[in-house]
Length: 256
Length: 101
Image (cartoon, rainbow over all chains, first blue to last red; front, side, top):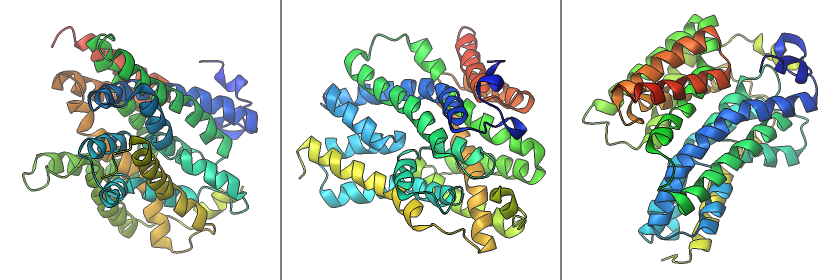
């Protein structure tokens, strides 16, 4: 890991300057996501098997949807023989945060980027891959997202299939330990900027506090986690934007 | 009603993909509104923070393992910041504290 900077064709400020460099960087950054996804998807596979999906159907679901809460909801819908309208509306609500993420990420793409890459990057919007993709300085190199997605989806779909096939073989202690790796990655994405920018640090702390309060208040604790994320994101990011609008200089930062 | 699993999966996969695709496809120009730009700038921090806590504490079999992983994750992310190192540190913390709690 120490020599990664030389492998990555590091440009200014420790980020790759070539497409190949971004691909390698993406594969490396995607590795912990792959592991974390494997663990979460494993649990998903066990659930899929319970409601009668085959390994192949579970593979299609995970590869086509790439959404944790979304897929648990999808399984619930299949199990309850939901109608088309209910399927579509539930999918929209549970996955609405991806809409926000996509809006946010649209600002990271060069306006001259060919449409084919917009179709490609759209597939790469999950909580974790979005987190990494939006953390790069300046414009996003699509191949960075593709590389992260390639290795992550391998873990995600592989984990789902393994969950269906051998759900009861992996030791519980290992599954338990793997389950926090996603959150460790989230921390690695949000803490370094919080360290440099006091306002972001405060925003992160407030977000966690409010999220915790939401999870214990009788009135709000019944709200599904996907919906909670949407409500709090709109409220808190909105409040932050009103309190401290970003400088217009950020444009010039994106120009290079 | 849609008892064919393949059709159900197709409908749901397409719905989820559309949610991800439409903004990327139609928001081609830089947004000039300062409030919206600021809002979108802050979205990832709020989203990831909200998803991390309290979930990191409740996802493990034992609350204290999760809490320890959170503390270790915060410290390692603050000092080192490398994605892989932070993730592994959290996993190791849960694995090791699992023997005590």
